Length: 165
Image (cartoon, rainbow, N blue to C red; front, top):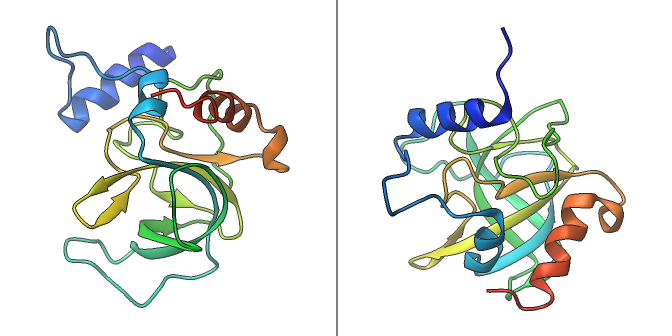
């Protein structure tokens, strides 16, 4: 039995406990672009940093991503957030503009291939920035090199650079 992307998105949304309520639908992809404080192309590290925040599993750690290009906002040369390093690519199989995060059944796409490039949508949570702010949204998508030719990066860049908010 196979299920379409809508069924998978609905299932992931239920699992994450964010089923859209009447009058309060999940943001669209265009709205996600508008809500992000920072949009950047980053490169995944080859190893975990030495930090291990409370509540993380042993397979997770803090990753320090190199900032390659800013599409919106300001950011230091590196940005840190939790994740898991993996040995496989995980490109989003959806149609641009993506409606859901890469991978199936996860609230957030938190796996990263060392050395791979990702387009991240960050929002401020207190003094930190996080890409994990909207469950099931495409806020940490792997890019196919060269990044400037990746369809997702081109779509987002066209909206972020026009100042769409």
